[in-house]
Image (cartoon, rainbow, N blue to C red; front, side):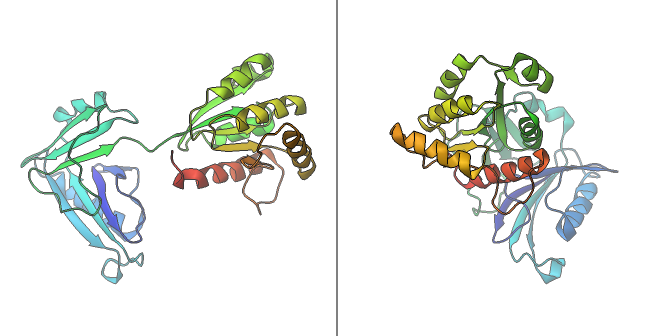
Length: 286
């Protein structure tokens, strides 16, 4: 297992990135290029050493490595001991992984509580006795998607492998079943939005403008940090005027959805632009 322990300056992947290397294959990536090639060679070399063996290597990403990123990367290369991997049974997104660097192994455990010792990204080079604590998995922003039509299905597919936790609804029972969304009666949807956690994103793209408005109204009064509505400039203007008459601040409303400048109204194009727009929120994690 090759893991990025720390980075400085420009680097292809961040701390916490890992890849697995076998004698004949590889799973995952630490960013490709010459760095990954050398790391893979090191990983295969350490497979000849006893299980549990590990080493730390610092790489300047400059001319000597044949890369021009300009930063530095600290890698750990480890011959994983399959007999000492019981911690994997408890590993889950959001939990804390504790790694202690011992002489002949990296002792790991998983806990739900933050441990008192933490190795800073630019901290000392790990040595015997060092303890590294890290959260498992990337923060997954809750995404509430209302509408299981063509665009809704395309968005659900586009975000499936991205760092979101999707809750997907449609009021039409047959359409929900066909798409794989949750069927929810109209009266239940506003209550659902009222329960969204802080920092959630809400996307409204139902088959009914009146329902769209009710959902947008509820979303703007919720703790959601992003409220997106599919529609034209005319639809936006009508919604904002009506919201203003009801005394609702529409500053958080994004309509139309999707990154500006991406041309095309095909569902897949809208989905790609919207997924990119939601990914841009990653610097604002609640």
